[in-house]
Length: 354
Ligand SMILES: Nc1ncnc2c1ncn2[C@@H]1O[C@H](COP(=O)(O)OP(=O)(O)OP(=O)(O)O)[C@@H](O)[C@H]1O
Ligand SMILES: [Mg+2]
Image (cartoon, rainbow, N blue to C red; front, top):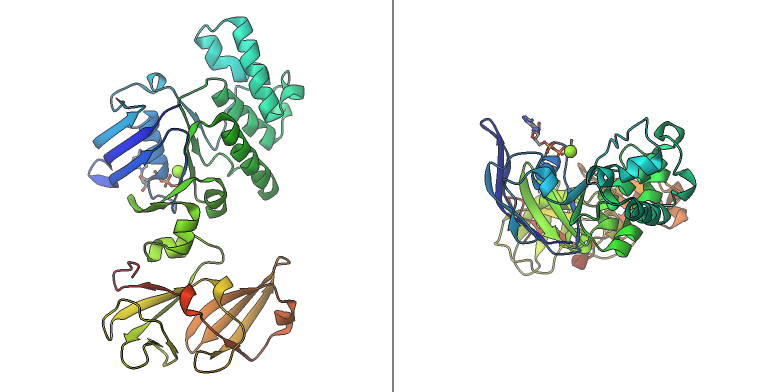
């Protein structure tokens, strides 16, 4: 096992920069998830750690050793990809032991390691099968087994579950988490599924446009997003945003563009500052009276079984509320809503949290 230190890493393809000064210290045994939209540079960063892409600038250290110019095979890292590319003519056992046989590991040692990994992954009954006789989830498990038997310093996962259907993904997600508890190996996991990120990570690294936006525990990012990008990316349905102005004065208020306004506890803003107010759908209170209450129009009701997503609007601004109260299944016309002060997020004109 090993720590991984990434210092001021830059990557350009020709003159086109795709990673800008990425800094990240990953502790021994930590599970770190990289999330971000398509094209933000997640795979590129992972492939640079694995040694499959050259480094344009900065330094990568694995277990304290600089690896910038080290061949992939000398980095002692195992990578699990979205496409698992098993050898079709080899049995599951042979697929799993391939790297050990290449290294001329002793036969009895191979047998022990493969049996251990197969037991962990529930692959014992399948060891003699060929990959074509396996389901997608089973194949993904073999790919994982192939990585485990090498007992690498660290695991790198690039969207390993995105070829699987939703149910299987849920199941494999839990298995990966259990496996990590078991092995305690340093892991970096790339996904654009934010539920995967939230459930698996010790820490999440949110990226956009080749720039790290925030690093923190899943709940740090959920409860205190550093900027509008993270606020909008983490959470489903996503955070609601309202554009407006902060008004200081006897009663401090947030004035929305359509004239609605709500009283506030003092955020550190100057009078008349342009701000974006954010509130998560599950924090919108669907009741109330008095000056804090607004009347929202019900545009659409979406029952999900688990709860109800209400599509609402205030003047021109659309937003969503989430509730478990089934009496809202028949909501229509206008309903009172409140935005409790302690659930509000504020972002300045540059999109930074205030
Ligand atoms: N070999 C290459 N040559 C030129 N540009 C590249 C190359 N590989 C990747 N890129 C560009 O680098 C950027 C980052 O790509 P990368 O594959 O790291 O994104 P990603 O975050 O993994 O996206 P996805 O979620 O779609 O897998 C993209 O704009 C991509 O087009
Ligand atoms: Mg990718």
